[in-house]
Structure formats: C-alpha cells, structure tokens
Image (cartoon, rainbow, N blue to C red; front, top):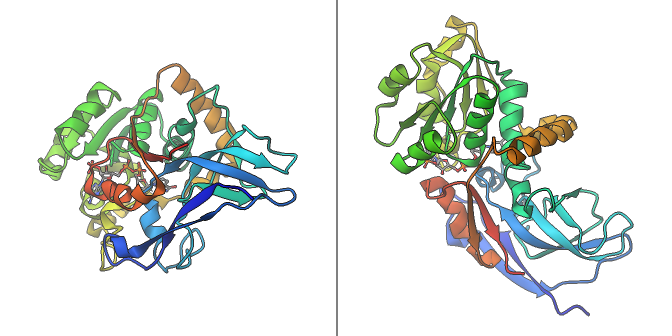
Length: 337
Ligand SMILES: NC(=O)c1ccc[n+]([C@@H]2O[C@H](COP(=O)([O-])OP(=O)(O)OC[C@H]3O[C@@H](n4cnc5c(N)ncnc54)[C@H](OP(=O)(O)O)[C@@H]3O)[C@@H](O)[C@H]2O)c1
C-alpha cells in the first residue's frame, strides 16, 4: 500500500459573489496504486485561472457543471510517478486537467507530453499553454489581426493580455493596453513593448482612449467586459473585430452580466464581435505551439510568472488574487515535491 497522501480542494458550495472559505472543503486520503493501463501523476504546478469562477456555477457552460463534492477543476502540469500504461513512463512530464490536488490516477489519455528540455514545466501553463494559445487563437484566428492594425487589449498586464500585445507587435501592428496601476502600465511599455498603456484605475478611460488611439481601433481584445467593453466599442473602426475572450469584471456579479449599450457601433462601423474558447482551435495548436516556442526562444515573447508555493490549501486565497488585481503575471501554485 502506498504511503502517499492526496490532499484535494473540493467544491463544497456554490458561491454568491466572491468565493468564500465555506465554499471549499479540503480532504486528505491515501493514494491508491494505478490499475491496469493507468498512470499515477504527481501534480507539480496548478494553473489559477479566472475561468475557475465560472466553473463553480451551476449554469450551462462550455464544460460540464462541476458537482458539489468534486475536486476543483484546474489545468495542471505534473510528473508520472507510477505507470501501467505503455503510453507513459515514470519520469515523463505531462500537462492535463488534474484539478486542485496532489495526485491523480487516470488512463492518461487526456495528457499532453511536455518537453522540459525546451522550457521549464510551468511554461506549459503560460506561453506554451493556456495563456499563449488563447492570445494566438483570439488575435490571429478569431480577430484576423493584420500588419498596420491597432489592437486595444484590456486586462493587458495579465497572462493572456501580455501575449496578445506582444504578438500584435510581432505581426507589425500597434498595441494599446489597459491595466490597473502604474507598475503594470510600466511593464506593458518597458518589458512587453506596447505602444501605449492606460491605467484604468486612475485615468478617464474614454479620454485616454481618444488620446492613445487617434486613428481608432481595428481589433479590440477584451478580457474585462462591463464598462471597459462598452467604452472601447466607442472607438472601433469600420471592419473592426471585437474579440470576446473574457469578462473578468463580471464573474463575481450577483446580478446578470452587464451588456454593452454601445453595441450599435457594430452596425455603424460594419464590424463584428465574436467570442471564442481556445479549445475551439485544438486542431491548430501544434502549429501555434511551434510559433510560440520559437518566439519565446528568440526572446520575442516574455511573460511574468506569479508563482505561490505551498500545499493545495492555499488555493482558495490564491484564486482571489485574480479578482483584486493582486497577481502580476501568470498565476500558478507550485506544490511541494
Ligand atoms: N476564451 C478563452 O479561451 C480564455 C482562456 C483563458 C483566459 N480567458 C480570459 O482571459 C482573461 C484574462 O485571463 P488571465 O488568465 O490572463 O488573467 P490575468 O489577466 O492574469 O489576471 C486577472 C487580471 O484581471 C484584472 N481584473 C480583475 N478584476 C478586474 C475588474 N473588475 N476590472 C478590470 N480588470 C480586472 C486584474 O488586472 P488589473 O490589475 O490590470 O486590474 C487581474 O490581475 C479572463 O477574462 C479569462 O477569463 C479566456
């Protein structure tokens, strides 16, 4: 019998507004041995994502509703520590959806093998994972960004936004970012190469957008929703693409999502607004990952990591950092070995 113990963070209740401690249960039980054709993975990094808030609701979504008592869904990177499967060897590193727990047993079919020689393991939750892929899919596939275009990016200092701005620059465009606070705005300009940054916490967004986008916006990559989406719509050019990636300002709303009253600009500017989930482009990921790995190796794409180290117990508090803007870079938890 294995002496390993598995701690799990389970969803105990559906939150109203911001998740609170009572919405979680933390359990511990011995880890079983993997059965025939199964693998046992030690989770090493947990991706902490705004979408997790939506996964806690009992509403139709792009993923099945998470049951009460289920382990919290999370993207993970881990190491195979026992295997009865021909497809996975002990010592292999894999990216998957193992959830907020120390160990996971499965048939291994969900895993993507990762090359830790190419990049450190946590990069597969950042540039070579959800953040880089989401930016690539939204900007280039959905948004059809072209050289000479101006992109407006909200949530620009976050993990997705940081990649969007840098890819827009790589493709010969202009990038204007919206972020909270002077430190994040300086990061946009000095480290990521954005052309302009707007501190939405201090500035009047409408006035600052007028100054930063004198020729309007060809692509609006929106991560925030609410007033930010509405204000950005006022500046779109003819033929603009408004890419709905997320709406973090709305995820903890106890009332219904706030829609944009400026939607009529889509008609006036013969434009379109389109949402997407990065899984939609799964077939194209191999080519995208090749590009992202090349850009990363050439130093053309960087993204801060915000890694908190500790047991799974720190997950509830870590998640809240996304909604206060306390995270600076791709938020992850590194579990003890
Ligand atoms: N469609 C997809 O497939 C897909 C995939 C991944 C992520 N997403 C979406 O992409 C967005 C960014 O995700 P991420 O992982 O890169 O997170 P992140 O941007 O690294 O972190 C969240 C940031 O959002 C900002 N924020 C929080 N509350 C806000 C509010 N009320 N108003 C304005 N800004 C607020 C904060 O930055 P400031 O300090 O600047 O306020 C915070 O640091 C999210 O909406 C997420 O749901 C979509």
